[in-house]
Image (cartoon, rainbow, N blue to C red; front, top):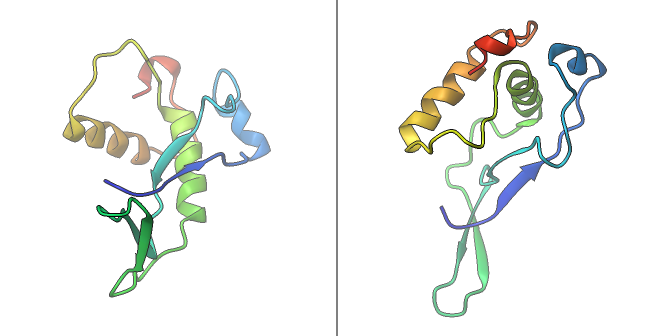
Length: 115
């Protein structure tokens, strides 16, 4: 996945801190995704210069603010991060993300029940 990555440092709602044992820590508690909603980015193999192209057809939905804010809240309320856990292959991470975002963003999971 060549191209830019957008790292989001989203401000969180005041009540979010009550969902978890500790408030989010900046910059550790962040997540990233490729910012290729309206444009695709590549490096020119000859010059090494980054180039971009408009997506055709354009996406039908490209406003990610709501989705991003909800995802930040869900990860804070339902995910547990264990740097010592074994690395997974991509399908394993997809399964974990789906589990987190399928949970109710209005109620936090108990610490022992987090994904």
